[in-house]
Image 1 (cartoon, helix red, strand yellow):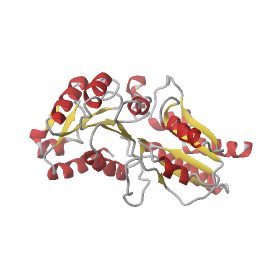
Image 2 (cartoon, helix red, strand yellow):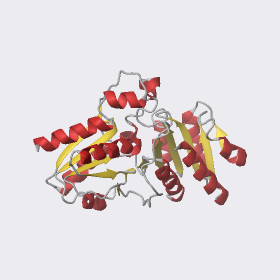
Image 3 (cartoon, helix red, strand yellow):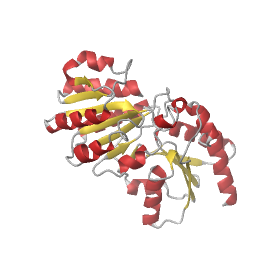
Image 4 (tube, helix red, strand yellow):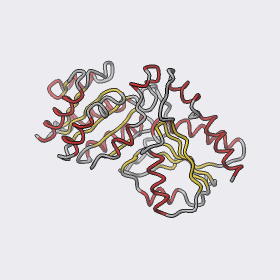
Length: 307
C-alpha cells in the first residue's frame, strides 16, 4: 500500500512539478525513489511534525501540492493546531498521509495507535478523509488527492494487506463501493484495511447460508449519502465494523446518515474500546478485540438470530 502511494506520487510528480513530498524522518525503503528522482522537491523535516506541517502550508501557499508523510498519529494529533490553523484555515493544498492506521503498530503500544484519527480529521473544516482498503484503492485515492483542491487526509496500512479488488476500482470522491453482488438482508460496512476481514466474514456467512452485502467506504468525509442508501435497499441490518473508537469515526458517520434518512433498519457497530492496554501484532489484537473475520461473522449471525 505504501509503495502504491509512492509509485503514483512519482508518476504524478513527473507530470506536475508542483508536487512535493515532506517526511517526518520516516519512509526509509519506501520514499527513496521519489527523493532520488526529485531531490529538490523532497524534504526530510526530521521528527518535527509541527514544523513539517507549517513548511507544507507555506509551500502550498506558493502554489505547490504538498504531501506530508509520517507514522500513525504523529502527522495528525501531534500537530493538530498547525493542521487546523495553518492548513484548514487557509484551505491549503496539503495532503496528509498517515502510515499504520488503527492497530498496525500494535507492538509499539498505545502511543503508536491511530484509533481516534478519523474522528479528529473528520471534524476539521474542509478536510477530506480517506482510508483505502488495499493498494489499488490507495493508488486511486492518491490521484484524487492531487486533483482535489484543499486539505486531504489519507491513512494507509503497512502490513502487506491483501488486495480486495480484482481490478483497479473507479473511485469518485465520497462514493462508497459494493464489493459483492449479494442482496441479503445484512450489510457489512467497513473502511480501510479492515475491509479484507469483513469480506472473509461474508464468505463464512455464505457458507452458513447467509447472504451479506459488503460495503467498502474509502471516504469517511465526504460520503455520498444517496448512493450509500441505495446500497442498503432491502436490508434489515447494518453492521459497521471499524478499527477505531466508537466516537466520531465511520460508525458515527453512518449513524448520522441513517438517522437523518429516518430508515427503519437495525444498526449495530463493532469498534475498539477507548483504551487498549495490550501489546501485540495487528492480527493478534484484532482477534482479541473481536475484529477478525470469525468474530465478525459470529456477531452477525447472533444479531440475525435475535432479529
